Image (tube, rainbow, N blue to C red; front, side, top):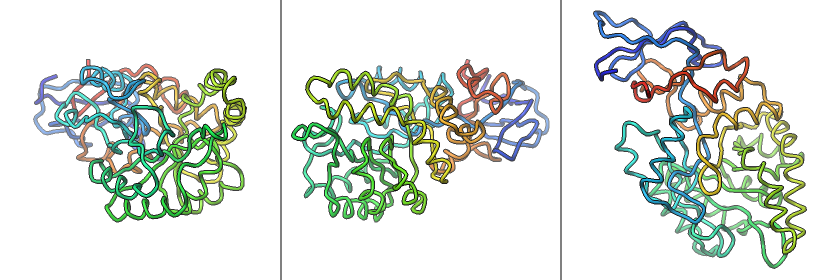
Length: 363
């Protein structure tokens, strides 16, 4: 399709859970619900249209051992695009991926800067590893480098105790989150365990990644503060293998990881039932492949979230949370067209009929 061609999407257009239309038009890369006057070069796509999918926990430019070359990062981004992921919140990366912003054929990225971790308390090569007295300064640095988000590592294995434990004292995270908010950035944190959550939430954090340690007594606190979670269930599925690998050296940690895995669906369903915002994230990059967004949506449904809300967690609701448009009039035409109604079976997301990025059909 040429840049001047008009795209006509006909069938059912899921603008939101209660806003379903019969068609939309794409003119000069923008969405319109009025037929353009005098249009001649028209391409029609039929099916069920959704806003471009969102992966709210993804790491473009990150590999198993740290940053990767640009050609590898490009392949990661293209893999996500082919899966219909057109908006990524890059939840921590040591790579400079600003060059992607100049590529009209790659997904849009909202960056959280580089992970900020306690010394020797995270994966080597991923994070700034610092001590609490430097946390405010590093949060300020990443708030200025990112796109409105900062990523902390809230807990990790403590080699002295042999189990997960919180990384930061309460006063350090309070000061750091206050500084991030002063600079206009939201803060999220990697958290597997239970004991890191209360201090982070009461200190004003905006989101928790993974949130496997979310217990019944903490759920009301999350709900009252409006703290979102991104469960990354396709990543939590790897916990048993991780536990097996650490059994001989850290048996307490291994048993803890298995317990967190065993209750993962109950954790997510209980959070959803309490009104905690839940969004789709895959944790792609590092050890996980890209392009897993459809699998994560299916995992949310398995956990007990209704299909329409699981769809919202990667489309209209996720985009609103991140401050990006969906299929509104005049918005950039980033959309996915499915063969059948994804509300009836979310697994149809795994094989999109068409992907449209900035008004161009990805062929």
